[in-house]
Amino acid sequence: MTELVFLLEERSMTEVLKIIVPSLVPQDVVCRYLPHEGKQDLEKSIPRKLRAWKAPGVQFVVVRDKDAGDCKKVKSKLLELCKQGFRPDTLVRVVCPHLESWFLGDLAAVEKAYGMRNLAKKQTDRQYSNPDRLQNAEQELRRLIPRYQKISGSRHIAPHMAIESNKSKSFQVFIDGIRHLSKSNRTSI
Image (tube, one colour):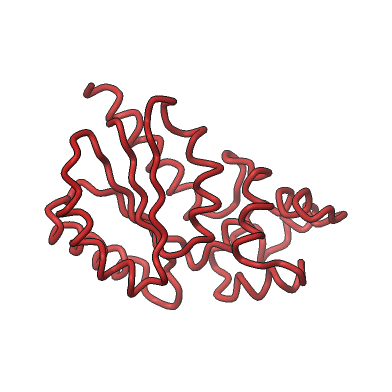
């Protein structure tokens, strides 16, 4: 693999991945982040972009929020779109339910990003020990940080995120997927 192309639902995810992905992949891998204008735009573009990308050594990753959908159905639909694009080897990851769940999974990062006090102590509270269960993660984050905005918040929080200790299971599944992809592609070169 010489290039890793991320097809993303929105720009806020781009801001996070530009910060955390370089620490997960070999230095010689070029990463491209292609944000879309929501899930419908992303889903329409997947088959077309995968078919059109002809450069050798490219691996694709699709990342989309679960929102109110069923995680398995969302992932199955995305995998089918990748097959239509003749790239069934695409790594598909569903964020459960929203990007803000990843932030709530690392309240120490949120605390540092916004200069808060005692926020990290709340990580053991029931709702933050498994933030993927929160259907209103963005509202919950805004309750804790009223000035939170999606794109600027992503830029502020991501540099402080602890990769290994994040309590969001979907974050850990994403990290494991990128590591596995990097490792398996390193051994095949």
